[in-house]
Length: 144
Length: 262
Image 1 (tube, rainbow over the protein chains, first blue to last red):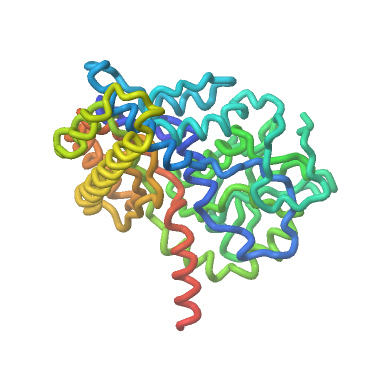
Image 2 (spheres, rainbow over the protein chains, first blue to last red):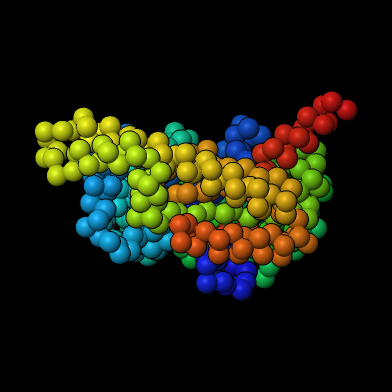
């Protein structure tokens, strides 16, 4: 997504993909190499965790209820949408704002990926290998 | 690609062998490694070298993977994107284990996707507007809301859960309706569309379209018009042109099925 195009006031045309968009495109879509090759796949540890662990339904429902109940407290509230949150993803240590009921899923993503910001600070623990983690060379530390 | 034990071969995807990679295109790693092609017959793997002993998957890795594929797609070459995380031992393994056994399928899929790119349309609701719409359209929800307002959460927890569940259901219904309208309005400018399986959070619509490169402007124009039409309810964003993440698997399977049938 590097092609410049004209922007309209109403349609967002991000010049580079937000992390949420990237995750949704490349973690569970596209060809799976295992299908075609079984021999020499290298068991590098993948840090990619399933980013769309959605909070439990009850939790979601309760936050919906809360949101609908406080509606008229914020007559002209400007609710923060996904794009802003996506930008937050890239920022190191972005503090989560648990304000909107509808933002639950993104919050989860942020919790998972917030620590892996663009600056590539050293990975911390909690990196669960998602698949193909069988590897003798699994290192927790990345060499720079 | 080096053959040292310290490096491995990261595979982004597959393109026709005569593809030219844009100059200076780099991929995963720090510093980012140059992206090269490994041709085999009529196809080529898009690869770069990575350390064989480092973990993969930080934000930079994820973005780089998508960047390489989308950059190629934007040049107009067909590309079969691989899911993140495909690593083979070395260049030889890419040829013998990956490309050669599946060359027919890959070539068929590349031909099928030649001239097409993916656009993905995502939209998020204005939360307040959405909830107001729900209350206006559903007196039963509005009543329950009145009944539960101001109640301490502890006391009426199950009532609140019920209220939230009804709102969630109403939101899901709105999503279905809006997703349908999205396809009705943009579908005529696309060859195929695919709605994301799980749409959650504040997301209103999330559908990918396979668009002919020469019909791209019409598609984008339709997206602009819909964004304007929805401006007070849904904030729409258009991603693309992208590699055909949502359509590559089907294209490869089609190719394979065709071969077998023939």
